[in-house]
Image (tube, rainbow, N blue to C red; front, side, top):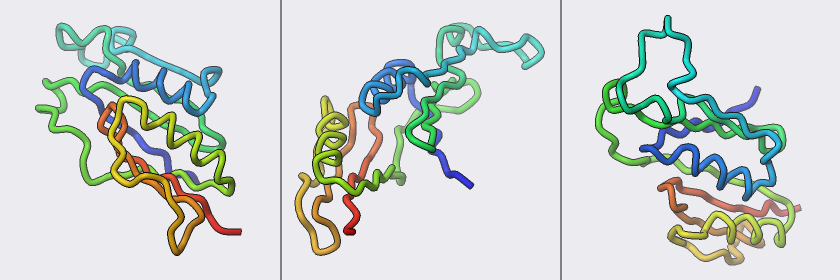
Length: 140
């Protein structure tokens, strides 16, 4: 079994997918379907949503990150992402720092990467899309 995050964003899904594909060196796995490409028997697409992302994903190792744009007619008003954090667990401090730095571009660092009692390197941030991340190095 795998658990994969599915993020609903407010018109920035395509930009986020490209950003994460770059961060995780996953551009070759990038897959995007727009609402305007959906089959007509799906009930139609609200005007103005045709070029928004209905479903996009990238593969990161054995996992996937899925993202789509919220359509207010279907999903209600966008209130941001809250109450969720994506954790990256690595066995290498240098790799962890690299991912942390890449994800932090344009975002807000909430805890700078540092040694903790459970990890040689742990840090938290909110990226420029409002997604919260924990980067954790597991002790060997």
